[in-house]
Length: 294
Image 1 (tube, helix red, strand yellow):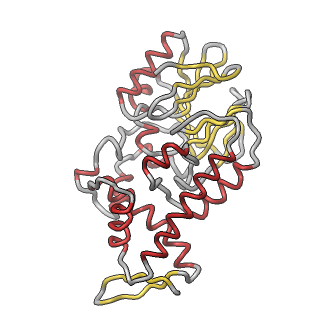
Image 2 (cartoon, rainbow, N blue to C red):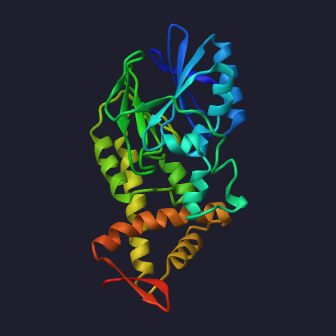
Image 3 (tube, rainbow, N blue to C red):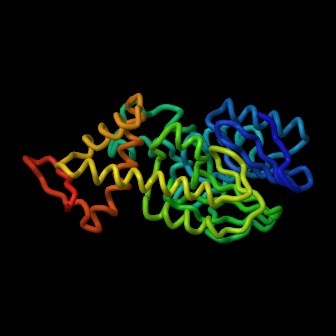
């Protein structure tokens, strides 16, 4: 992992999670902090090698692979941490993520570094469509993958798009991207289609100058999953039954962490189908049964 200059004062360190940096007069704002303390240590070392002082970390959303380095960096630099109001509580209290995914006290098997980062202290709440004046960074709401997810547009015209979209090669590899709100994700794709920036940097995938092919791939993927659910529900099905059939169809090697992530995505896709009446709910001996209307 190394920081590469994209344009002007905007840098990126590409890796499992692409980490942004905007640097003015030797003071750096990081955009996300990676998976864990090891990521935090690497980022701090890279900053020190460039004589940057990390003053702020902007977290695009609360997922552990984006906030995992916060605690390490904050303890050593006393930097601020900024996030949207919807995401901040989960950064301060990361144990809530596995508990929400499990809908109660989470088993230890999902209270791991992939779903639960170390806690860190959010010092700045970010409002949508505001600018952090000291650096001129614009905060753009990108709900869908996470409810309070944000992107960051730098004054150089570089747009860090978080997990709002994923590169097509990664979609093809994994097949079922995590989604918290299907309808808002679709709205975000539509917004991105007309968004003006010189470069788009997703957290997972390739830097591009034309975002439209990427949004189209993500739109197709979620719509295909919705159609799969409708087809599965042509016969009465349970939520777990839908999860199992999708896992089989996409060749997924399941474990408890994978299960709760896919189950949450299935729930997000089911909600608009239930609201529209395309899928009907009934109960059979106390078990929720889901069936397509036609």
